Image (cartoon, rainbow, N blue to C red; front, side, top):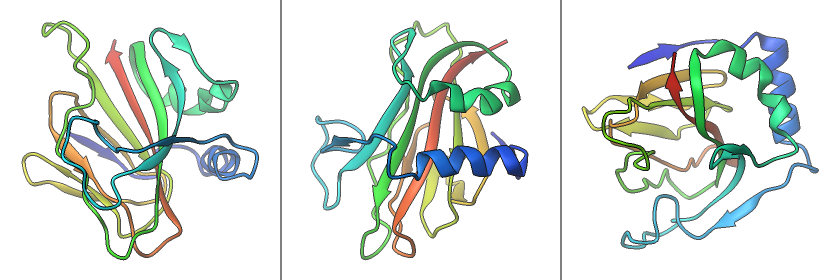
Length: 168
């Protein structure tokens, strides 16, 4: 696991965040955070926007990610999405999961998480490592590492960009 503080240059980070947080940015509803196969938990929902998936660009907003993509060493993109979990009375944990299972086991997939706000929300990885949401913090981990995220209780929402890619 690698952790990078102030991952993007400030100006580019705030520009990206400003667009995602604008009134014009389209969000889509998901009545689960991880999978419909899991037992439903309270507050087990989120909004999302898929920039890239199934080998193609899925969003007219894809170009706002160019500064982010310049900062990661990728060979092939698999999926990029932004997740929005609304505020809850306390941080509510999702189910433990791995992000990307739809590739051959011999393919090494990387998960990247760019946090877009500083809240009391967090991500827990299967080895007990807890990463608190912090503006412009980037975490890179092997996609086979299980993890779970949370909502937050001290902000209107918790935002992060989730990337899955094959590195160079």
